Length: 138
Image (cartoon, one colour):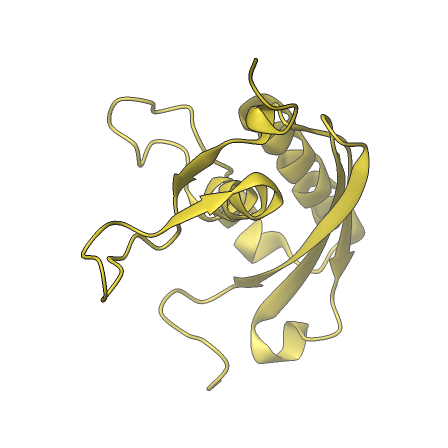
């Protein structure tokens, strides 16, 4: 009989890398695998995956509209819709959009969710850079 945590899954870690000792791909499991999946969904623009063009989240559509309250509401909705559609292992998704670092070109998304199989709450802080190719050095 399969374990009760099998639903949480195991897959390649993100970013993909090889273990220096074994030469095998490093994997992530359970809650860490879900966290990485959430990150991948939020950082993938729709249309980027050739075989799955609807996969991802269109955060970049709102870059020039920020920090308007209506645009923040749309960003929150975009994130919730994408995660609801593409990550079936989580429920009760909540997103807080923080604008306290907007002057540096960074939007902070606090994403909270509950892992469906374990009822364990978890979260991810996702920095979204408004200018491509720019990190904290702005």
